[in-house]
Amino acid sequence: MAPKRPQPATDQQVSAWRPGVPGVVEVFHARFTAYAYPMHVHDAWTLLIVDDGAVRYDLDRHEHGTPHDTVTLLPPHVPHNGSPATAGGFRKRVLYLDATHLEDRLIGAAVDQPDLRDPLLRRRVGQVHAALLRPGDELEAESRLTLVGQRLRAHLRSRDAVHPPRPDPVLARQLRELLDEHVVEGLTLKDAAALLGAHPAHLVRAFSGAYGIAPHQYLMSRRVGRARRLLLAGGSPSQVALDTGFYDQAHLTRHFRKLVGVTPGRYRSTGV
Image (cartoon, rainbow, N blue to C red; front, side, top):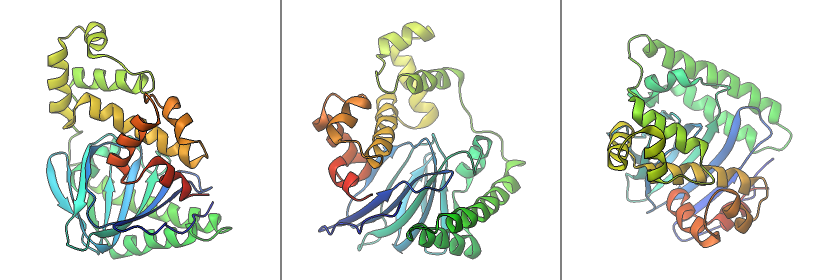
């Protein structure tokens, strides 16, 4: 599927869609002048190029940037934020990729160096986006993305042997797995503490210390991620709110706008 043109706005433009290309969860094109992303997570790999301006972001408590000649690869499950690094804001193109192209064992290597200075890779990622904008060119996009995935894996595997796996304390991991199992219905700290045999305050400290994000922020990120997919599939904001664990549409809108930069209704209208 191809996107509609982004709707004009005073400080932002957004276009999002899910193409018929295996392994691509979502395509997201956006221009922001003042909007800043809070800390959040994705359940997919985030492959990002910036065409105008620059983005400043924190990943695993380290600050990074996105100069024009780089490709940024943010791994799943690792919290990050983002804000304009220049007065004019930034314009970016993003591919969200599942494990078809990049396996989870490469997460640690991606955390260590998310910004890749590789002009050929940068050009190839741009070619994928160009093909995705043309209805009927899905095979070209898939072919070009295969080469992109191969080059990304080469970058990450060259570091994989010398970088230990990302620390993942047992208690924090157990709570994350519980939250993943209860994204829609939710989970109270009291219930989680009973299941894991730990005090609620200790759970919060362990989770925040391991992942740099509070349990409630992690859960909301996962819910918003699900909402994005359902909205692009044609779901109405009111129904999507119920299907992803939000109290009502207003509750979804508040958190969605905070994490994505636009309302669910506007986000849904950008795709086909």
